Image 1: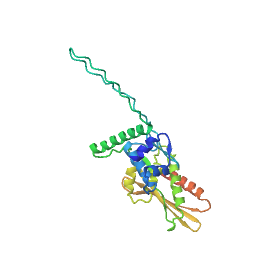
Image 2: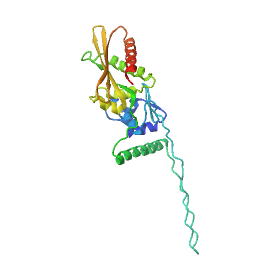
Image 3: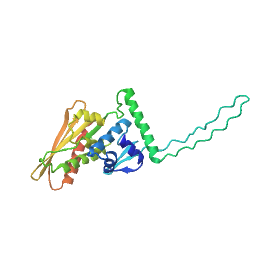
Image 4: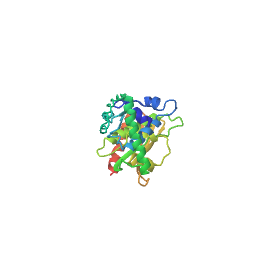
Length: 266
């Protein structure tokens, strides 16, 4: 509720993750995962598609923006009219107009967002269940954050995260393939949740995950594709590359995986 109110107050503006943490979770020590989770929840409630948002848009590496129109209702003040006087009675004095209080932008935003939230809560109470507005497409895949299995220090975590983002970028460019954005995928980083539940939450038919290992001057990236319907692995591959240029390694492997999945996902 607080997140929706804040976004509505700043409709059309890009609001950073840090700003949301400071304003929405003021006085509470939390991680950006709290923002990702709350945004994902709002999108599910609103039936909003992250790739074609009608309410909340993701601005890569900057934050979020409320793209829905937030504006005051038209002033429809109903004048008060005295009833007609009885026969022989003295006409009543007219009732003076009462000044209409002005609404600030914050008040309008709060009122609009509160009304929307109340409608959503009412839908839950009276229907007794949520409605999945994102029908699962057979050509859809979510890329989960790759695991860094190199050492206990996890000194290749940045490479693993970059590998994940590179794969999301490459796969999202495949015609007809639906891929949730990084903000949705990274919400599940470090969480022990069944693949079938993750796929249901993101509305995808397949889930791609993997790991990164390092041995001397070689990086090994393993990837696997899991069918959400039954949890079976339907494709897997391992890639060994020299550590000379990690960016080239990410790009090279992402291209290889994209080609393989393009032929696997139907």
